[in-house]
Picture 1 (cartoon, rainbow, N blue to C red):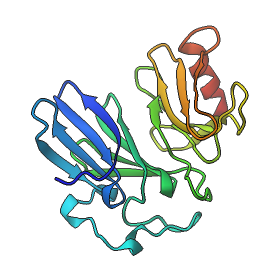
Picture 2 (cartoon, rainbow, N blue to C red):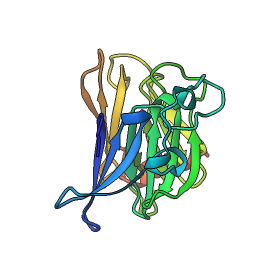
Picture 3 (cartoon, rainbow, N blue to C red):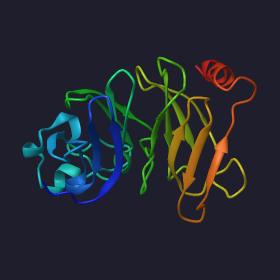
Length: 215
């Protein structure tokens, strides 16, 4: 199994599986046994079987604001929700693909589709409420944090702008959210820092209340 550029690894400890976001051939999701590292399964954009992923560059061509490419375009990151769905962010095509853990394609969410080089969909995180109602998406190019309804991908809000002051980002690359609702962000380029955002008042309730008002 050729691995040509690992961007992210997520562990499903209950299933003893390791999910790998690999940028070889534009991007693939691959699953390995967490103990033996034996390859188990994998897929590409729209749930394509690994054997069906094309090597034709035309299938990865993308003009911002235009039709989505047939294959992942590159810089793939991933995360999976508590209800067993995999979210693969194809940053260079400004989109997120939602699949089952077996690779069955379910949905495609598009964020800021006119975003150019660098793309708009970076790291994927979930809100801390039990149903994980919202997706939190880092945006490297626009330097925003996007809040999406996880059910339909609808954007319900955003925060942040480009800059080097606290609360701004310069190369907003990755994101994580802990069980208390604290948001951790990592920057590259001139940013090169980690910031923590703490919800006011209730660690969970206040953040979710603010998101609800944006809908």
